[in-house]
Length: 191
Image (cartoon, rainbow, N blue to C red; front, side):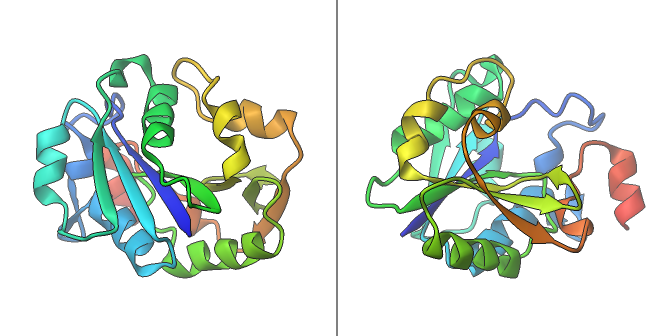
């Protein structure tokens, strides 16, 4: 079993038009593009972590038994609080879990499956996707990293934890799959 923590509680500070995740992009909300790719993959459980727009996000989500929506009451404390909300609610039968970003609509189900296939052969360390020499998201963690991730604080992700430990690399040749949407200009550029 593989889980995914889909981070969707950010404040979209750089996005001038409200919450970017519920902004339409190719006739569908940005978050739903990201979610669709995860749902089509071999991921078994999806924990969607919401914040101040919990009700708006919940309203647009499809009904699916794989999805569990968790409201992060401490979302103002930053990214680490959302990761911890996911960790608290993860199914402990999982072999590993992704930390995914809600604003990455181009990371395909095939990309997730490629990572899962690699991870199933070597699941002792986090599996980190790379484009050229750059570390990217989403990262697939073994369950033994739950405690380590529970120590992060503030508006930071898991990068420090990854760098301090051994990890496996998986290379991807297309940069577009790692593109995220932060501003209205990003949306115009991708249209």
